[in-house]
Length: 148
Image (tube, rainbow, N blue to C red):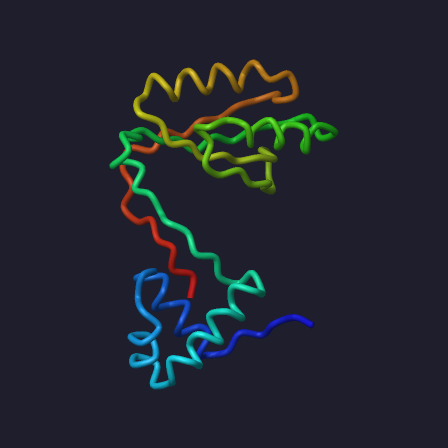
């Protein structure tokens, strides 16, 4: 049976997406419910894989000051093989299958432009990638984890 989220669940998710360390007591006060209700709802959201609690790192604080979005054309019969290869690249933080000319899109975060060049050369060396289009990120104006 699929878990259906309601307005209370949405409220809890919204509050936690703004401050993941907010206490159940504080959430309960803002939502006008008991702490026990929040605890049970939180557990259901976790158990049903709707909510995942992680620490989000600011890449700039770690010295990862350069980024790029890279579009990849891949031999159709090799999509899964290439995805598996891309997952092994430490610099790649996001891989997605897309529609259009380029079947894969990856996002990278690295210390400098030199590392972008190095990664592009490594990608060009993968035999199942037939074309690479890179878009260097100059500045990020919004990066949020609020989905509700």
